[in-house]
Length: 165
Image 1 (cartoon, rainbow, N blue to C red):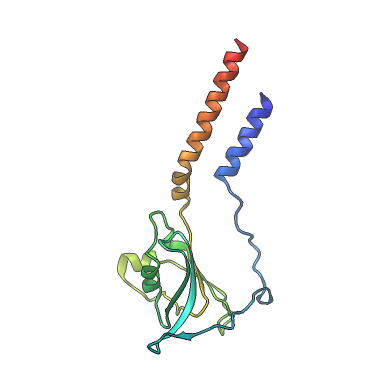
Image 2: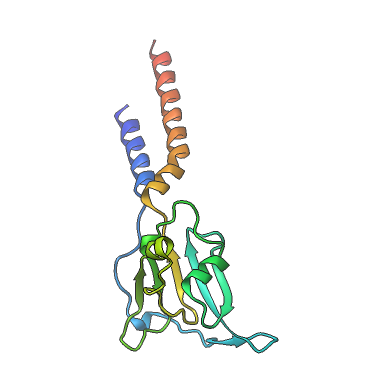
């Protein structure tokens, strides 16, 4: 019985606290730089590729106009999903900026509440924008899984009691 409790505890702990990202900051030499920086469409518009990951409508690789701002890019990808943590949006550069910055942390709640775009940065080719999910939203989406596990444990314990009777 102790083995079962121990195993269930480990299982629940793993579901509630998944392994996070590695906190080490890779050096610039760890990255491969794409040779494809800018493209043109059939009308001569300058285009670039960006990656949008995380809690948005259509995450993935997107071809967008050069000069697109963060609000328009979020619209292109279908906007943030319910439960997106707009305070902790990150932009990763493929190539560091002149001042050496490779990662930007942007609070988009300021824009959502006021329309103020002053903390936006220029989107560059092959940038990766990550919109994380709020912890509370994650737990709510996992509630069904946790409920199922507790139901299975209850059934197992009832079967154990019947077998012991």
